[in-house]
Amino acid sequence: MELMQKIWSSARERNRCIVLPEGTEERTLQATNKITEEKLARIILIGNKAEIEQKSVSLNLNHIKDVEIIDPKNNPKKQVYADLLYELRKERGMTKEQAEELAENPLYLANLMIKNKDAHGAVAGAENATGDVLRPAFQIIRTRPGVSVVSGAFIMVFKDKQWGEDGVMVFADCAAHPNPNAEELAGIAV
Image (cartoon, rainbow, N blue to C red; front, side):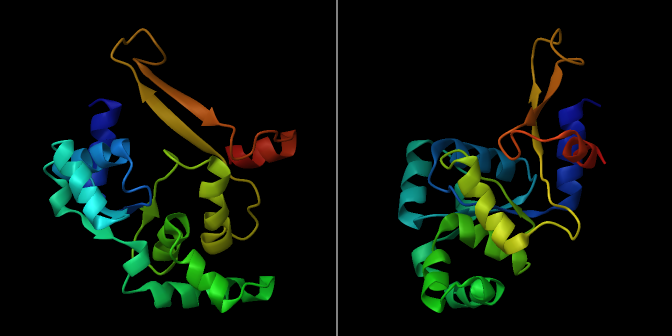
C-alpha cells in the first residue's frame, strides 16, 4: 500500500474533526470537498456561510453542503470561547473585551474549539503567515510541559517516482523555528 493510501486509511478509521479557519479560500474549499467526499475527516469551515456557499457553487463543489460552517461573527458559542480565552490569558493582561474580539478571529476560534474539545485539530496557512497561525496555538493550546521548541514538515508525493523515496519527499518547515541550535535540533528529533 502506498504512503497516501495508508494515511487516508488511517484518517478514515480515526474520523477526526478538523477546523479550517480559512473557510472562504478557494484551495481550502477544494480540499474540504475532497476530504468530505473521501470521508477522511469531519470538517468545520470558519467563515461567512453565504460566501462559502456561493464559492462552492461557482467551483462546482458538491460536498460542501455536508460540512458544518461557523460564522465567527454570529457564532452561538462565541461567549463560551471568549470566556475560555479570557481565563487562559487574563494573567497576561487580556481583558474580557479583547477576548470577545479575538473569539471572532478565525485563527483564534479554531484553537479555542480544539481547547474546548469541539475539534481535534486545525489547518491554516493558505492566507495567513506562519507566525499568525502559530501565535493563537501557543497562547491557547500551548506545548506540553518541558517542550519549548516546535517544528513541522510537509510531504510531497510526485507522480514521477524518480524523486525522493519512490516519489515521496519530506520537507522540514523552518518557518516555526528558523535557526535552531544543536541542542534544540536534538530535542526536535526525539
